[in-house]
Length: 399
Image (cartoon, rainbow, N blue to C red; front, side, top):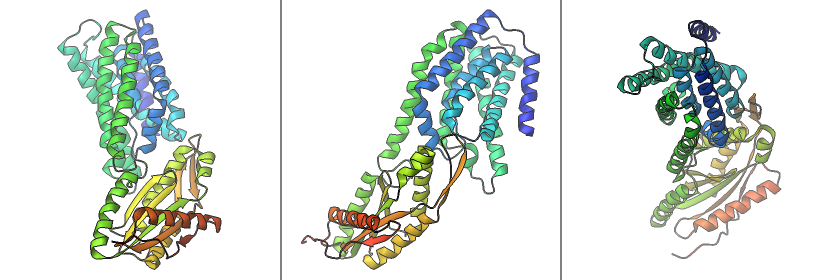
């Protein structure tokens, strides 16, 4: 509450010390608000994807429209444009209103700090275009970046029992995104200062940058890692299991494969929305990391299907590992948000698990997977929330 009150006082002080708006101010303000609305509409799915995969405080790309408003417009008009931007982001954010209000206060306080830098300097970026103007915008952008990080990260650190750097200040990706958007905001401010329609011309470029950066991040992870759970994806899992099969053939050791299918997972998406479903998938990934052993190879093949490779493990040992996984899923209590951004606690989820085992010297990975998958269907037909082992007579290949 104190933080919000400080922000309100800063808004009042800025508004009372600013001159009334001119016709040019109205044109610039309208162009910036319209550009922000179009940008958010184009980038809606990109923004949702980035928010769903984030682990710390989120740095949204709407920042690119905040700095021009604070540099060029009267304070009251700049504040209104920022609040309109945040109102449009709210349905995308899917956050409880109190958390979103606090985040808005932090952004507004950072923006007002950038405005103060401009006002104190006395430099008018609308009259000339030179080194002083570029330096001023760099300082204003830096002030925005620092104050925003302190305001949001500081409160998270104080309110969290065991805070981490990533939780408090966000990931490297998010902070790099914020820095890039501040720089683009400075370019947008310079362009808008000399041509009030410039923001509309910048919308396709900003949306393309937004989408392109997300694709780069996804490609980095998608090569071998599932970005939702941080487990191996199908490609990464097959690469590691291929090496494990080669070792098992040399040492004539046993291998087991477990296929894990979440029961009624579609109900989670239908009831609470896809972000809640993603939260459940991340929780299952955490359970798999906690309940499997060092050396076990854990992956997600897509949808609600996960797979384990258990080296040096026979059928009886594999069932014990699978039971730990099944019980871990059953014990989950997943904090998420529903379709309206309200907090929900998802529990009573179950999984059906199929096991297949064989000697590494003669077994074939595809056949083990097929046998384990067949065992999963037996578990589902048998009532779900159970572990079934495939028949021991799995076809083998001669060495």
